[in-house]
Length: 287
Image 1 (cartoon, rainbow, N blue to C red):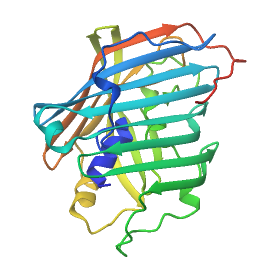
Image 2: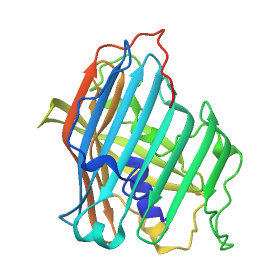
Image 3: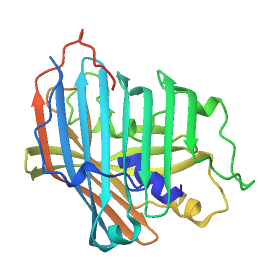
């Protein structure tokens, strides 16, 4: 797990962790839970101007409950060489921030794979398992017990609940810090408002909030690694947030992260929503 990749995962939970699998399927209408709302967003993934993969976010929102499924797959020559694919799932509740109760991710390349499972109580980590275990190189900054409280996993980090009762396009919805823990590494992604744009995509036409992003290493990282230093100094990262009609949340429409190999852009190609306004009393079963 390298810092440049994981920071992208914090923004979109996919590029760094090699997520993937179902993203190549044809776009389908999401199935909303009773009384809730659902959205499926398909993405294209480009690096230095070249298409390298596809991705998908599927979110279900019912009352204050959520479930997020994220998948991605490297394609073309990169996919043929690396075989990179995987998927992640998170579930929990939300108010002004996600409070995950469960997270899992499985990734695979042509010569390796990794699986992470976390159990949480309202965003506090109670158990984390990584298979195979990370090799202790002796130079990682420890992740303290305090740093594992009040966190979001990489998939839940994609869910941006509205700040307060204002409009979903309120610039204040950009201004937040995402305290991400992926089972091994703890870091913050600090978002700040830049501008509002009007965009049109298949399935969506309306405003997006353009948020600048910064990466802050907290623990689990190797501070002398060039990639960590690069990401901490990286000021060329942004995420575009679009409101989900029928739910008080926003999801990424576009993520741009400068890496040592060029700019990684993950941009929506289709936005599909179903359902109406979620009810306050409804519950969402986590699968």
